[in-house]
Length: 88
Image 1 (cartoon, rainbow, N blue to C red):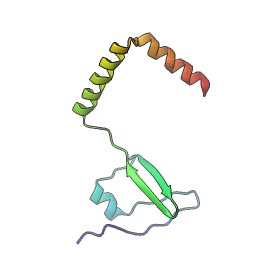
Image 2 (image 1 turned 180 degrees about the vertical axis):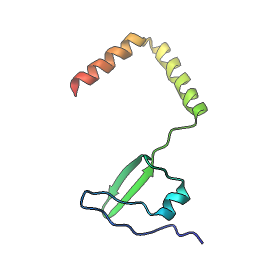
Image 3 (image 1 turned 45 degrees about the horizontal axis):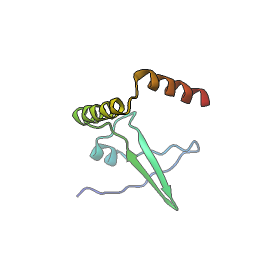
Image 4 (image 1 turned 90 degrees about the vertical axis):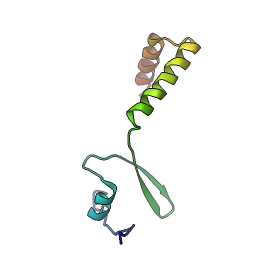
């Protein structure tokens, strides 16, 4: 029977080790990224994963079509990125 929980301890630097049993069950590897959510006394780590390539390409196709229909050019996008970067 696989347990769905385990305990761990936070270090003085705020680091938390995900127990080996859970890492193996979820197939987690070094460098994995997580979205961290907190509500009251609950902390949730959600694995951030890229969508399948076909799904990404389909979404990209839809975005490009919508941009074309709206009259947005590649230069418009470059200008928007530069403007956004200057604000930081």
